[in-house]
Amino acid sequence: MTGTIRVAACHVAAKFLSARETTQKALSLIQRASLNDANLVVFPETYIPAFPIWSALRPPTQNHALFQKMAAESVYADGDEVRAIRAAARKSQTYVSIGISEKVHYSVGCLFNSNLLVGPDGAVLNHHRKLVPTFFEKLTWAPGDGHGLRVTETPFGKIGVLICGENTNPLARYALMAQGEQLHISTWPAVWPTRVDTIGNEGTNKGKNYDNVTANRTRAAAHCFEAKAFGVLCSGLLDEPAIDLVASGAPDPETIKKVLKDAQGGATMFLDPTGAPLIGFTVNETTGEKQDTDILQKEEGILYADLDLSKCVEGKQFHDVVGGYQRHDVFELNVTRDRQKPIRFRGLAPDLTAK
Image 1 (cartoon, rainbow, N blue to C red):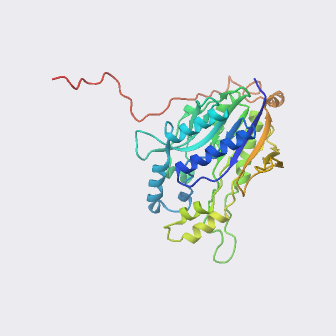
Image 2 (cartoon, rainbow, N blue to C red):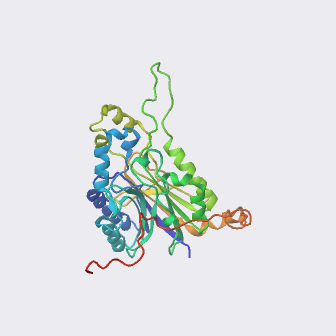
Image 3 (cartoon, rainbow, N blue to C red):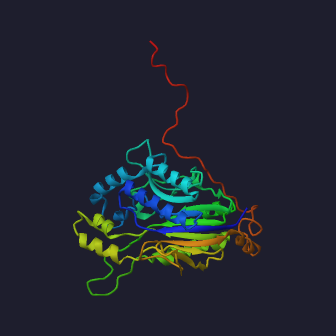
């Protein structure tokens, strides 16, 4: 079954490196979006408790305390924070997609960049771990697995999700397309600086930072066009307290602050099944008035859009890249969905009471 779904994309800042406070903020946003009739509420990449942007700007030798804090504030998939999100989804009768930095019970320092899709009954419908941490993210997160490469059946249509750079992975994207995905969620960090000093001693421009908005939109639009699916890009926001915390204790904190403030912020937006931008709307929380807009970038807010997933059909006539426009006799893709585990025990446990 397909139909119109109201999606609320939360373009918001985390309470940086505080799992408890960020979770409380998320609960408030879920309630707010549900009061505006949202069916699906989406949060940015690793919203709880933060995105480790410090690793882009500070060498590993300066990051021990920040990593220790990140490990302490990351959350278990079966922990209190996720249980609270699940309860909020159940209370509001909404689907919730939320990014978390996930810690695991078998290690005090192994973390994953994960996304959870929670249903209106409070059940976790999909638990995806980012396949490959991107660039400096490898200093924080371990590689994930294919367990979460699946779409979720809903009364509105089939929903899938990939995290940030995974939207550049054609095989991961094809894995979701081949399951009939109709709504694609992509989640992104607040900023992505790739250079610290962009001006040379002679005053000539040595280069520029990564064009966050163009890069993310291009990847997401390509996927929407190929999948004939709607897209929601949900990016985070970096606020002043977060910038101060990242710069604190660095040898040159003012440089880090300047880079983070000058870096192009990520954008939250919607795309149609041709990859074209869609006009969404915000809601004035005082008056209830709707304001049309196509993008949120520099200020916090919730961007809404009503998406009719039945409109994913027409483009399949032109080229259905997993159906009539594919050569299954020429190409074959196998996906392993096993959840990776560090150890597997076989055989009976020893009888420790035996003499």
